[in-house]
Length: 249
Image 1: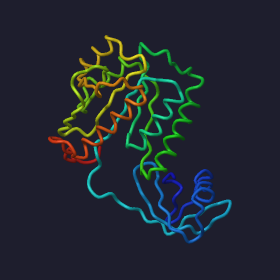
Image 2: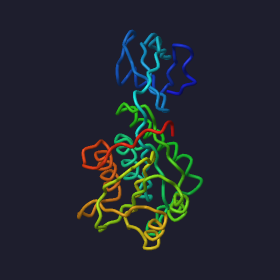
Image 3: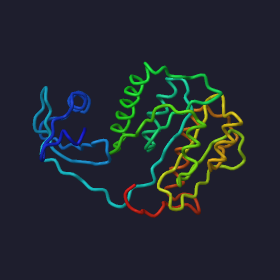
């Protein structure tokens, strides 16, 4: 739901959302609902009208307690469409805030420009549905594909925490966020990273690390990295605590 659909203390749902409420959740007039606007805000309300048009009334906005967690970015090499879309869905459920699509030297996956808009629209639908399914208040951003070396160069001066996953790397993921409010997890394609890309990542300040001894598919590696990072960030590992909140990002 977008904030512009709220007028005062009521809202009219979009057709897709109305269908979900009527035919999937099977709610009735008078039932309580929660609404999310995709921008990090949560609302509660009551179904007042249930027909071709669904109206939610008595809407109340709820404010989060405490500051936001660090923003989590997955920068991933492009892989086959079905596997990539599965990764998008599951990583959204695990709390990723932004996806950066990387074109790399050892991957032949390229998206023609005339198909890119439709593909991005499809991916936004996937992440929006995944966010709704797991009760997230925000929907991840999906960036247009960018050359990996160019991306590393753009991030070379950033103050965020940056982690580059490399098969066979001796150091395992053990992030120390300090005061960073943004963390990047960089995952390669099925063919792995080119040596020049590894060098460019190191030069840009990425911490090179691994995910254990097993050889993982690219989409599995992305989810494993996100899950481990979220676990560590939650304070379940010694020496790691969420960064102090300096205010809005």
